[in-house]
Image (tube, rainbow, N blue to C red; front, side, top):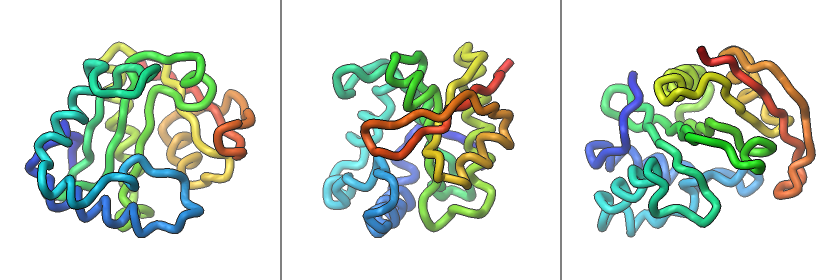
Length: 176
């Protein structure tokens, strides 16, 4: 099990993961891959991978986004999930998003991958010089909260999230 940069090598299992995201209940939090086109990925996965990798340089992103480096957790050659390390924080990210965001594909949740992806993501953040990591989760996301706490997260506060109406739990992780 390891973190890798997005790669065409994982096309088939990545597309299977996107299908899993699409089949999740609409009540689930919005997942970044749910809106991807399966047909588009199958036709030109290489362009998708290049675009994902370019975000580390701040390219091909929505206005106001900060550079973020994406890594995929793979196990036995299979895509399991992704972690994004944001290289700096805006005021919005300080309040709502944090330095690190991660997700495990639905079919692989509850198997310890969340703990592993966050631990590995923290190592990557440390390599980027991020010694104090802000990380957040919805207050009702008990599995994510447990993962954050297991990886050294100390609750700072809970605040309203005007975007979703669900409060955010905000943590700091000392990452030296």
